Length: 285
Ligand SMILES: NC(=O)c1ccc[n+]([C@@H]2O[C@H](COP(=O)([O-])OP(=O)(O)OC[C@H]3O[C@@H](n4cnc5c(N)ncnc54)[C@H](OP(=O)(O)O)[C@@H]3O)[C@@H](O)[C@H]2O)c1
Image (tube, rainbow, N blue to C red; front, top):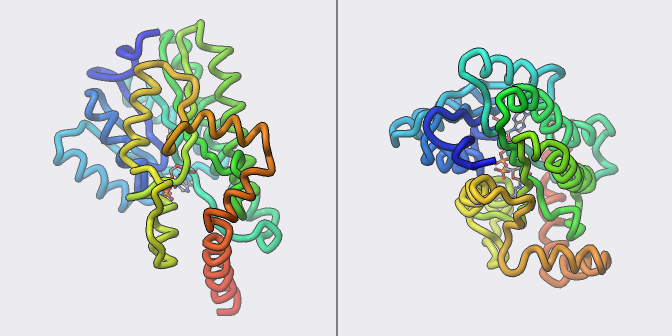
């Protein structure tokens, strides 16, 4: 399958999590290749703001608000776009995030909400776009995963489970549909700076970025690379990311030791305490 068939003039991309963080940068990069990009997220006001900025910069974009954790939301979103346009050529499952609270202090329902956003919603969206992609014999699904599970990043149990799940899901999806013209790639992100949840977390705690963080723009460029070069997996982190990931798998005890040595465990403890204090304040009025 040629990447030119899913990017460029006459093509339509859907980018989730495009109201803030890394998503708007991904949308801008895809729009820069030509073609139309539909942005989605829950916040209509933020989507409108991003859409206005990208349109002013010459991009062909529109938005549809949706809460992807709601039953049927993925199917409704995809059907709406398919009615308006010829079909969806590229889906970027970027929406995601972690509440950064301790697993045991959250209810199981709160924990399952994290799974819903980071794993179930991307599966539902992929399922919803696949029929149209197969009918047209072309399409690409890019899933945004994270190193969290591989490096045992503290306090991310459910998020890590979901993001590791995305890697397995993408591998099998790619294997099953590639010969029929539909490809899939997964981007495995380390810590990201300049935009997104990692940067906000540091800002909230008054902490500085580290040299282990990658600029958010690099993620946007990696999406294009994954599609153009039809890559199965790209690790977006400084240094030899794929090797680091393999070493982490070979020595599962290394991640926690590195997190402690690099100060990530202590930093995350500080963040968690801030989050728990906020949650207590809400509960106790
Ligand atoms: N930033 C990092 O350091 C980092 C590291 C590794 C992986 N990642 C991954 O990169 C992706 C983007 O992260 P980010 O840092 O840009 O996150 P972010 O700034 O928190 O943005 C998350 C996006 O997801 C949307 N979203 C959240 N809940 C939603 C829901 N229920 N339904 C629909 N949309 C929803 C948000 O929009 P609304 O609030 O308007 O709904 C927002 O646009 C995520 O998958 C994240 O796990 C990020």
